[in-house]
Image (tube, rainbow, N blue to C red; front, side, top):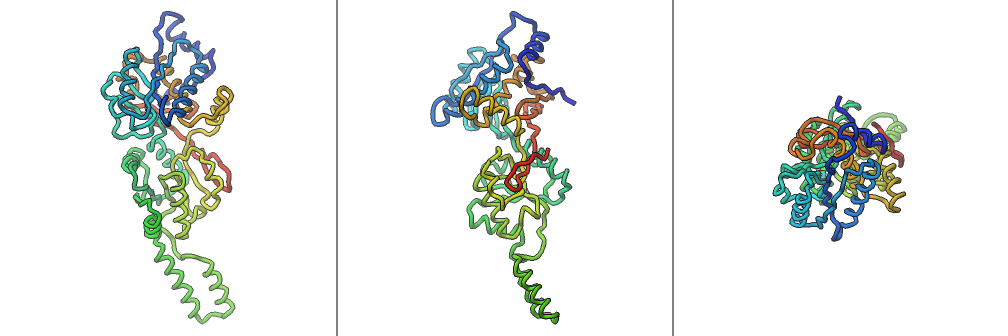
Length: 386
């Protein structure tokens, strides 16, 4: 089992540092921070900066220094800021936040960037995705399907730019699915596709045929009447060829897909409806017709604890990326206890694990995956499955 390190109280953390490096004359641990500090996304950047300051306070070691720089929304500005951080002697940087900003970062190849994006494809070799990526999510979903012995899982992905990411994540996670459907997000076409997936027209015709058969039968008229009344309360007859489905979608689009399944007489009460990380979207609690609904996510109790601490200090609510950046400060500090931070090429190569507020980070071959929890929404409330 890999060593798991948790951000802990000031005294314990300081003792660990002293035992490894001694009291004095050690170089500073310089951590760069690339976030939007200007432009329409500046509030995200401000929240992340505040969370890193909170992490420094909790670690309680004056050797760590944070150097924030602005990315705006421009990859050129991001590169410029990265070069400025390099001149300051920074070897490892948290950020940038957005995938679009990483475009030119291979030009500073001797720096490692822990981007907050959850995209893992088409990254420069010195950029590591530290967001909650699709592999991490499908790993948790795989665990859930195995626990519930689900054998016929289908996966549905919108015809958007992240569909390739999902396809590759299926292979990496080794999630067993019976079929992967790419669906059109245009409502009419979406409904038509889901009718085909669920064999809706055949099942609807089955019902009409059964009603006709009962009407023509020679059974007692009173029994016939009751049977027909019961059949008329149905929408279809016949099973679909899956026991669970995963919808890799979000927000209103997710609700639209589930509603289309309800229209075709496939209900979450009969089949397992699973989706990706919804960041505890509270609007889903009120949509009782689409419940039960299952999804992987970070540890909710830890998130709430962090949000309360953040609110106490700053009198505002953090965005979810703030918790991630808080943990990344702890992760870098953890690595500094066991490695030379100047050797960035090997820093994230060897296999190790780190336990932070967000959950456990698994590190190997310049990749970070998260061990996620799993949640169920049912009857308007949220329940942790594992």
